[in-house]
Length: 318
Length: 301
Image 1 (cartoon, one colour):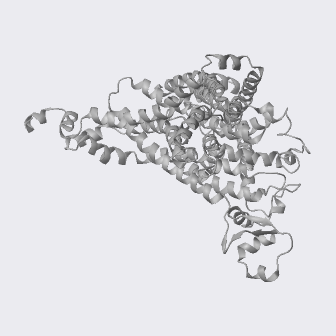
Image 2 (image 1 turned 30 degrees about the vertical axis):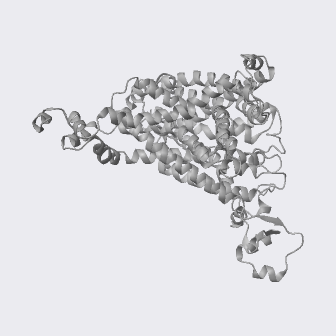
Image 3 (image 1 turned 120 degrees about the vertical axis):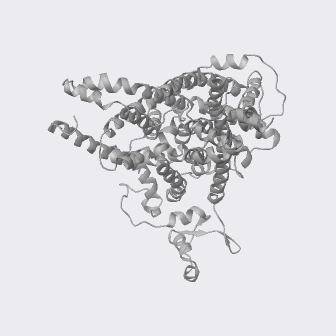
């Protein structure tokens, strides 16, 4: 079939590519809508018909990070003139930034983003380091009942979060660990650990055993061989696994909803809670969503060659 | 042992004689992980198994009293719970069915050479990497009857999606299809690219119809991966919580995970909810078993 294509086949090929373009645009439309709403003036967020082209502005991001109230009467000119540029944008929208003394009151977002980062980064570090060691153990040594243990490890990943959250809530409450970072970190580590063991086992299985054996002959101990030969060889795998674990923890909603409410609350349960009555300011919510989704989008492109492997728990390589 | 004696041993044994033994390292590497999972996954489950035989309520300070299988009897004879299971089944069938069709269809389209193929494929995979809670929230804006872009794009006027009891489940399922078709697409593409080219060439020489080529060559060779996608998505859809919970408060979208959440964290019927959790768990474990069996089968190929 190689170079010779009938005109019918060529036509079919062109139609398919046209269809790919249409499908891609449909799939990306919701993402474009989130991104564009994050840069819209508030009045254009919910227009009929929808506003597609507009002058982008940064105001939604200023709103995202500040606490505001509606102005009851227009602001005095000298106050407006004395305000910094970003505060004028808020006045322009008919609102005033709240202050305590001289300092601007921040909204709930910065703390929630910080919590998301703390919980996702710590649980990723734990899950990946423990997972790499365990994967090496299963990959290189004879383990009695190896298949059963691996099955057990993977099956913990499949547990529905709500099912695990009920007893965890009771246990955390008994020891005062509800609404703490450490409580979420433990759960996310457990959740990602099984994934990290399976994925890392695939990566380590691919490193030839001969590398370590040569090192052992040269006088390395097993531990030295692991740290100096295996770990450097596994760097790509470790990085891919870490990114997957981070995204899972970053996106997680159910555990965070049930086990945190204020101090340790992460962004996923917080952002939807900002939607209230008909007066919801979608531009600020879109700005929060945009910042929240951005790292995941970047990571997806970095991971593109490992997505298949990650989504199939390391079972499908290529 | 003398150096001469050491030299005669194999490298592993020599390394063991110098540092920690392999057995010790193996145990140090594996046991903490197993213990961690037992303490934070299996032990809580045993804890809630105990509560599932009691009338415990976490909101009151009264001690739990043992009531045997009463909770299970109550749940299994409660028509409302069966309604939740029916809703869940409907959701699984609609959303997983849609994902299989859309995902495999798009993969067939993508399975050819065209400019920026890698970039376009990655763009299409974006939805499945995103947070269901946050994405679900935004789809509410897209579905809005008065200013949502979906009604505008489809010319549906003020059609009600999420607050319409008959439509809500399908609306949530459409969002789920949008998010997870890329997963089916990813696995299908892997299957399609693994079909040996010479099979198609042979079929072309034999002047086989494209339908024949599709059903006799493409489908059989891709089906193991499609099956994996089907089982995995079925399991995930059965556990669904985030999307229906965020997007709709309708009773017609109250899947079993939402019922369980309300029972445990809003009505505080802790004992009863532990029993329901176990009923749910049994279904999940059954699907997991099938899934891992097929995963291993594909791995061996």
